[in-house]
Length: 98
Image (cartoon, rainbow, N blue to C red; front, side):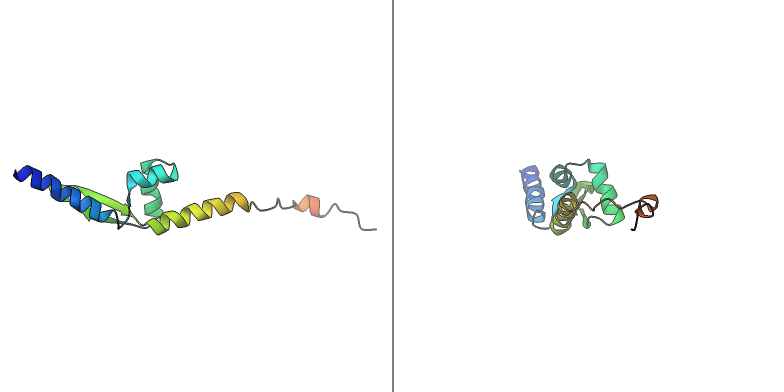
């Protein structure tokens, strides 16, 4: 009976934390990248995340859903608004003025 309570407690902790953010695995699936890439994005600041202690010595990272959305919007904008190709210096000087 005690084990069932422990499992239930861990489950309730996890479901309660879903409101705080997505796990590394869920975020990796959402962004279509590896879990290692998610950790790199956390480290370099592209994603905001917090580390939570779980029972039995386990830790879980929860990624802020707003930072995921912001990253997806930036990616989408980059696809839609590709900058025009700049002229090279050699091309700029070669125009004839008559």
